[in-house]
Image (cartoon, rainbow, N blue to C red; front, side, top):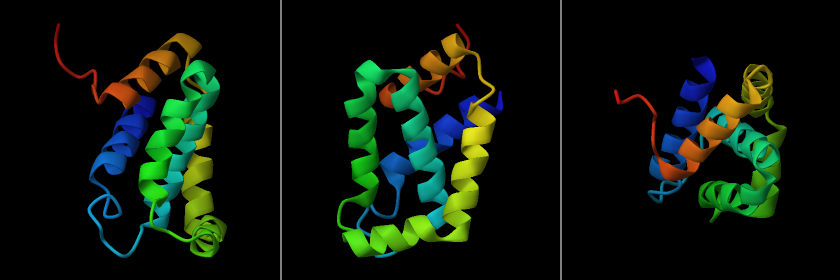
Amino acid sequence: MRYKSVLWVAMTWVQFSPLALGAPEVNRQSLGTVQAAVDYCAQVKPGDAARYQEQAQLLISGIDKDELAQLREADDYKAAYASVVASLGTVDAKEAALACDRFLTGDSGDRAD
């Protein structure tokens, strides 16, 4: 399912992003994708909202506020964010909660039981 892929990509990017590895430049589309997934999961699982926001902070640590504002104003950031929101907006609530739990744990959910 597409939403699982979106959340998995977002979670993986958080863990292995150029920012997390100390690279000087951020990909605006990836940032939009991850921020949308984090915001979505914070809404789906409000009790874990702080944990999702911690993941988002991994991405933006080291970026000054003005630069972050410019990144978020970019058309490719906005397009990626909107695309993820539209995709995740159609997900069943129970499946969404499961996918968001996996976002935090790093479990792709793709293994056979």
